[in-house]
Image (cartoon, rainbow, N blue to C red; front, side, top):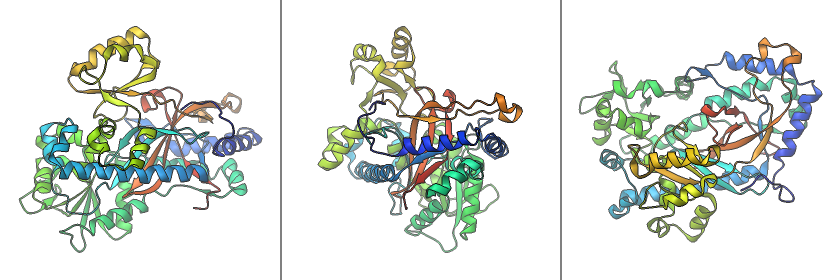
Length: 466
């Protein structure tokens, strides 16, 4: 993938974005709209590690061709990953493809007792909007978030003159990410072998890692649909051998598991009531611990393994080759470490099982000596955990107005109005196999994360007739 124009673009995204920027400029920068948007966000419940979310006044605009491509990628990816999970559960010899903690191997094999193999997935990828080629960054399952960010950012800009003018010229549709998930969750629960009438649902995570404001909104949506729902800390759950309850004794029939499995391992002793209830088939865990197979970044390596390719169709293997960057363990058994050092600018290194872009390093961001030292410090398990080395996919760039967090304390002539090119990453929300929307993040640096000044944008489908 490159950022070079390759003849006629396959999408209208850049043209629509420029049109939007021109409308903003025609409103003299729409400073009142930008001020109102920032004030809305500052007063919103969105906080990440104590910091307000950096958001964009310009939405991320996609056309029908992009929607079609995203939908194809989402559905194909989900189908392939469901095959991988199923094969892992059913074929003991296949499990050797994956390197897991023994405790993790045990809970992955717990009974599921409902139909959906992979209820929740967000596939983060880099799409070249000129060619419609793309490459994955990572896959997120039960810890998937960002829904509230997308909602609040869209609300913050909708009443601006710029959005109103653009919408007067086009059909503009956002992403509905709340009711759609609740509907899918309920549909999945109805296939549960031990489903109850009038069930009690719980959204469970570890409080220190939870996006509570998002959970609260989802809980209200469950309640709007007629289902009792509470937010619970995994460590406070109680299991008496028959019933799983929260700390007040309230019965729990089904859990939307927002706790990622590496947090379960980190809180192993405190999580035993949950684990025991799932083992005893006394609660529906949606999704099951088997979703870790997808969440763990070694999934990309596994997709190229001959044992995986043997049960995928030729078309699915072709899809993997086109969309999954080369990935392998950072050790002498799997890769030439001297070559890894020489190919610095083509590679990125990641731990197998972290989230939030922690300990991710792109070779192009550092000098040779720093990269060499990093490889030596992390190869062959030297850091105390396995690391991966992966082909770096160059992100596509889009024009944005960089966020101005202090806009409401500046005079009009101090407000920056010059667009800049930011790198794109699109997270495809896939609810029970259905493409539902996009979590749009952009950043000025090679790695797009909160630690590298990324911004979140509202996603809007333009002239798509969805």
